[in-house]
Amino acid sequence: MGESTEERLRLRFDARVRLEFRGSKTSSDAGLLAYRELDERLGLSAWAPGYLTEKRTGSNIQHHLVSLLRQSVYSRLAGYPHTNDADRLAQDPALRLVVSRQASERRTAPRAAVGRFETELLATGENRRGLATLNAAWLWAAMAHTHTQRPILDLDSSESPVHGQQEGARYNGHYGGVCYHPLFSFNQFGDCEGAVLREGKWTAQAVAGRCGFCPTRDL
Image: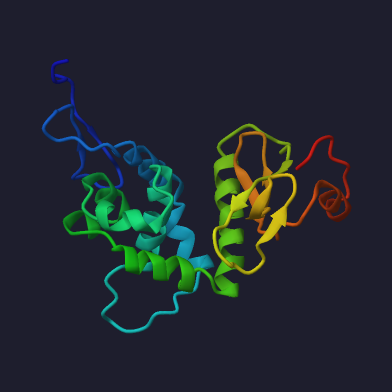
């Protein structure tokens, strides 16, 4: 397939970026550019400082809160669920572009920095509540661009297996293993409206008693 002769598409979040069809300049994660463009149009990541508290101090911070949040979210959108992938992805040209203008000119945050961000900075009670509120704000922003007047919520749960002595992990007879049993709420578009991390011992009957409904199948 030859190169396109039409005008190249430029992204608004960084006018230096052009989309071209050239085999010598490819990335397996170029689809992240579409997510980043939507992020920019709706202003989603820009809201993070209003909901999350930066605990780090000093003038030598190399990777700022918004950039770390983007890196954490976008890497999972690309199919990399673990922070172990961060060192390899730090050199990926597409990820560097979508994380921040500064990161596009150097490596993104390494595994150690991403790990501290997720397990220390985001793990505080204040920021956990902030993340839940931020998620709701993002969904309202997206819903504002639809004609939907009445959201429909679906409660469902999932298995989150563990392989150590994590606090709250319990044996679940339905799944036949030690796990967490988180509960999720989705709208009719498949967007996650909220989530609650629960011990693995929760059953469908316990969920019904807590949520005030009678499930027709195991959650």
